Image (cartoon, rainbow, N blue to C red; front, side):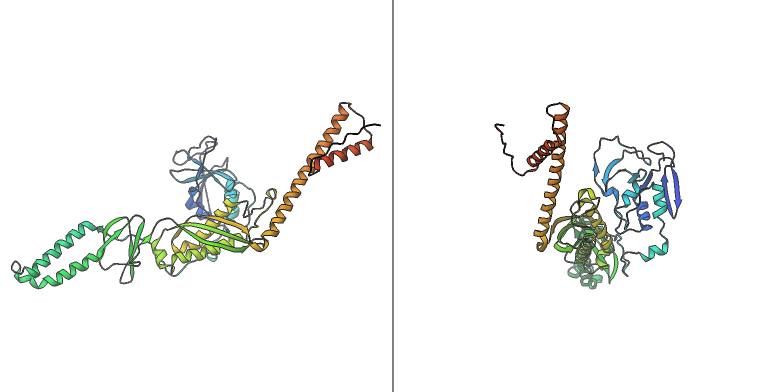
Length: 431
């Protein structure tokens, strides 16, 4: 692979169990999500790293870049103040020098310093195996993972079972044709009827988790008419597991923000069942589990940020940085529900407000701040206009003013410009 900027061949960074292609000249690196995931496991993160390929593309006027791995045109994505290039074909992500630290900043407990990509990897991707074991996520005793179950065409098997059942029916009531086998008729009909229990019908985006005598044998996926082992029973016999994207709305919660202000926060979580075996066997009720873990994640994230912060302060806030907060919230929920085989598609704040008991006071505070800012702007503008007026009068030799007259003029202009009401002109007549 060659660098997209200088054209030199990539080299391989091979340390701490990482093999990362990079350009020794420009320090750009080309990564795929599994490598990013491995890097995140060696770092001190507070939330799970997101897959950049799940972020929607944006349109920029910049010339497109060709993927150094497969030669396809790469797409632009925006994340946490960084514009990255991703390849829709091979799923690779290109990080220019310094962008690795900016990308991981949102997930780290302590924001990293600005540094080049290789120095960032050497500085932060050095967690040992012992540290990784001490920071494992939630794990349960059940280690079931989804795998497919063997199934056959339901229509073909139905035809065969009916044909066999008809044969045994003839043995029972048509003993003239098979006099020596008539004793097999009744048992054969019973077995044929029992064999019909192996027929399963699935609609689009549905699945069945099947067990035989309590042992998990696999998951049946795919719409249509299927036939499986008649001994197999569905864990949810009356309702197949839905694989559709679903929305969770837990309502509004009252949570204290970073500085202790009580606020009301409401979120929606869009999710889907990814691993049916984990969803059924690892937790008691995966929908209730998701609901409780979403509440817990929301509280953890909200407590880390203030409700609001001045725009020029550089401090992230719940109101001003909704995109970054939503990304962290999604990662936090995903980490909590990974054991239940649930995939979080999106998580967004739908309601954000001060709690009723402090809402009036905080509104007055915001109004006071706005008035002060407005007055400050008015005064700064008025002083500039007075200065300009005096300079113009002096430079154009219109009138010569002594210090006392200048002071009176400054006073009058400031009163006129800074007043909330329109000034009334006064015409002086006489001597």
